[in-house]
Amino acid sequence: MNDCIFCKIVAGEIPSKKVYEDEKVLAFYDLNPQAPVHVLVIPKKHVTSALDVNEDNASDVAAVFSAVPKIAESLGVAADGFRLITNTGRHACQSVKHMHFHLIGGVQLSENIL
Ligand code: DGP
Image 1 (cartoon, protein in one colour):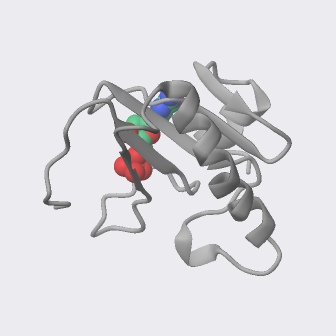
Image 2: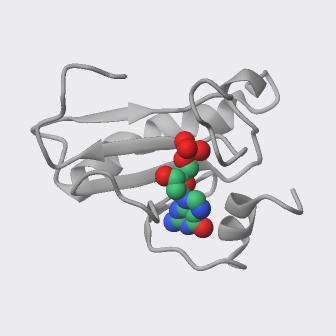
C-alpha cells in the first residue's frame, strides 16, 4: 500500500532495526519501546487489521505465528515469557493500519491487560 509506513519499512524505504526476516514476515524494534524488549512482528503483505484476515492472507498471518518462537528465542524472552498483542481499531488505539503484533517482554508484566 502506497501510504502505509510499515509497507515502506518492508520495502526498505523507511529504515528499521530488524530482528527477523523471512519470505513472509518482518520483525523490527518499535520506535517507542514500552518495555526492555518491544518488537513489532508483521506480515510483509499488507493486512489492515485482525478484522481483515481472510483465506487469501491467512498463510501470511500464520507465518507470523510460526516466526514468533524463533524471534522470542533470539531476543532471550522465550524462557521467562512475553506478551503478544495486536491492537485493532479505535478502542484499541491502533495507530498504524498494517496489522502488527507487539512482542513485549524482558520484564515482569502486569496481570492487567488494560
Ligand atoms: P499501534 O498503536 O498498535 O498501532 O502501534 C504502532 C506502533 O508502531 C507504535 O508502538 C509505534 C510504532 N511505530 C510507528 N511508526 C514507526 C516507525 O516508523 N518505525 C518503527 N520502528 N516503529 C514505528
